[in-house]
Image 1 (cartoon, rainbow, N blue to C red):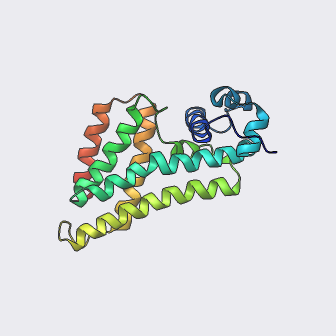
Image 2: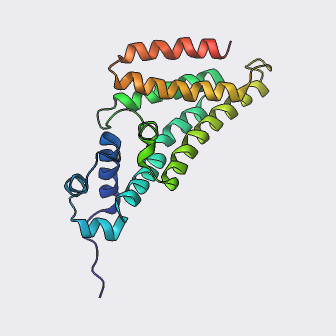
Length: 194
């Protein structure tokens, strides 16, 4: 007869996600994972697979529970300019949220690209491309609504804002203040959508 699990799978996965987010894939050991997940190696392996498979599941958890907030900020905004501002403000909120390690798990993981296999790289690349596409789409929607000039290239704006997000994450990790980053948001959206 199969034994029932005596732990909460989603809570264990969330703990792994936070650890990978904080330390990165390479610096996270199985012992670290055992400790934060409060599980033995057999339970981790039987439920989540090896370290790489666990990382991919943790990344998926991040995409659905954390990164999805960035997409939501684009959708719920009334105008394209407001959408870009809210998106960038959400990046700052996520970084300074005390319940999170700071930064963005996707961007930080991309920076240790040589540690990942092809499947993980595909997940990471896809996440950034989806974000860029969502930004581009929101800009194009703003053009259709007459909020933005028709000659603005939505794809170029999407690239700029995606690069700005990565840069802001690096700046925040380097100790730049919330106020400095908020000033950057205002000036950037003004220039990009002029």
